[in-house]
Image (cartoon, rainbow, N blue to C red; front, side):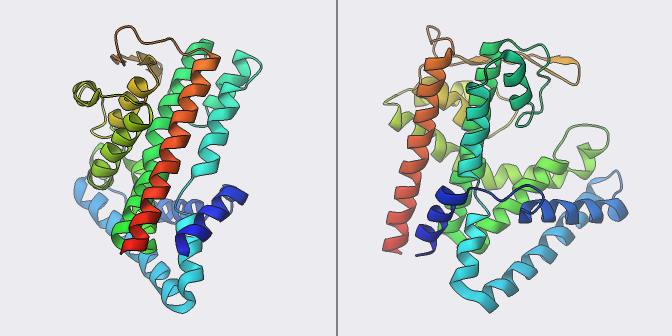
Length: 291
């Protein structure tokens, strides 16, 4: 019941606007706590992380106790970002000009987009789609199966704190260490499940190559769905990008003779991700019936 209601809400409405989304409220709460607890060391980061997460979790637990399954369904709905994920990527792929594509892409990636060519915007959008298929959909569903709706919400909080603090820069390399490491742990299995499902949908048998190429990615988890999409869709992803004015040297992902990402190929890759998420939702629904 909870899962069906959640997926219906997601299909009909998608995410609320950023200003009113509870994740945005949580982000403001975390920023406020950071403003008076911050110190450039790991201990401060651990304490702040615990304070932010425990306080928010207690509030959600009270909602669960007071309002029951209706609250749980809303909680799971707000923990996933299926519709908005595809809308953002669609905006990049359907842009009439490269300028519009860059503007749409800048909303979903942290890399510099000002000098990107059209194919580069498509590749970047698909990499974001692959990574967030795991982070925004499959991982919350995975933790819903393991720990229920509160587990999905707890995962979303952990993922949000990593997005806020998990940077290797002067301010966050020490303070954000806890947020980054916890996110690595909770995404380890969902990222690999996502990659496996993508290969299955794309009828690819290249798991060994996915493992090899994913190990060259800067993230211990994000590389798996990105490389898996490259093999499942037979496309070329990866390559160097510019971040903060500096070139980030990255390897290419996919087979040596993989296709370049033109408009038609990008749509095919997008459909593979969509079908992967549908398959994941069906599997979660089946597991929920059994347990």
